[in-house]
Image 1: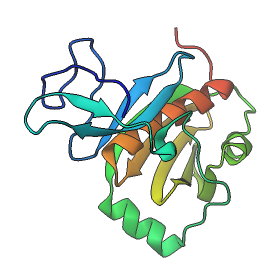
Image 2: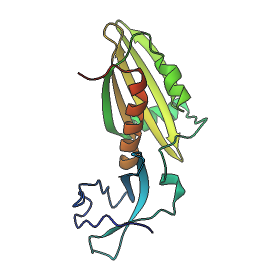
Image 3: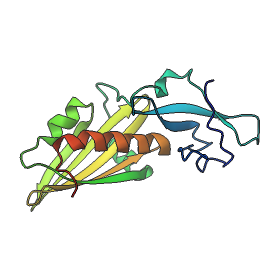
Length: 179
């Protein structure tokens, strides 16, 4: 184990303003020296002390957030998980006209499950995976304004939030800057 966030807050945030995470989830989001967000396993020791220790021994949660290549999900499983999982975040951006959303996401290991146009809206359903965790995404884009709303669902709250941040960074490549 390396590092201590020195908080006595029962998972509500440290004195240094860091995001401590959720004791039940066992993960914490931290910014490394390069400015990238990392997930690290979190343990509380000793019991009731209010001190959380970050365990660097689990390589699954160290380094940049990386999705599994070649992830697959059955359409029925996607629908069942969509109904079961909670929304972990949403993103609103305005895309540059002519942006190839599906290609950008595919190049980042986020696969399109289905898409279709109704009137002036295109609706997409995407999925991605990290280890055994699925991330499900619904995106609705206006063909008139190129405004896009993405809603992310996942089983794990912390990984879900981490994926939302990752997706937002990817979408910045084809989005107009905020005013």
